[in-house]
Length: 319
Image (cartoon, rainbow, N blue to C red; front, side, top):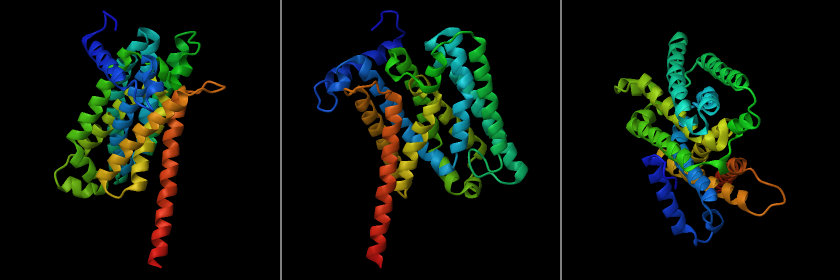
């Protein structure tokens, strides 16, 4: 632990190290808990798995996947600016500023477009696809221009796009924790309204829920997840971390609470299996962030197969 670390970083670093030492002899965790540079990424993906599972269920129920994709790309200029002008530790603060601007812009665009066509079905908003696409391409283009204008960033652009999970620092983990807490608070504070909005927008409005505020809260929560994951899994793979666990919960469950439990379990288990695969002896290096994404996707495919087999079995029993 560095003596110059801020109090939050020092607190997180100390807590993570204590947990690592407590788990170092646990079967199945020995390869990951044997060294801090393996254990920090594990903590990161577990944290992301929990938060992405909760937020991802709402994204799935609201049909807001395109909005989530737009926010993933919209945060890119903040990530580039933070890395290029202030260093890697400034990525999350810079990306957070851009993320909040993007979330507000996306919410206003979707509601304006929804009113224009007389339909608003989700955080992306029915009829708001054009506005969402404009925001996606506009912000992402600014990020590309910034990355080229800063001169030689050999290897840095690739790192921003695909992440470097094994290079996560205590400071980066602490900042990601703050972003994840923001996402959890936003979702928890609006949970009842979000669920009501997902199943019956008209009824939610009649019940007194402010749909604009609910959209803004969900988009801000998505943006916070994107920001927290940006330095670890990169801007391209974070959409999988955000969408796949929620989709898995939707495949296997029909009620919201089981969906959330399954989604969180999928995110955590996928992160663990991916990290385990990445540190196992291999003839060639394995990208940990890609391994995590593939492991999570494999769990979704397994869930689809299991759900299909369950439906066929019930069909035979009912015949």
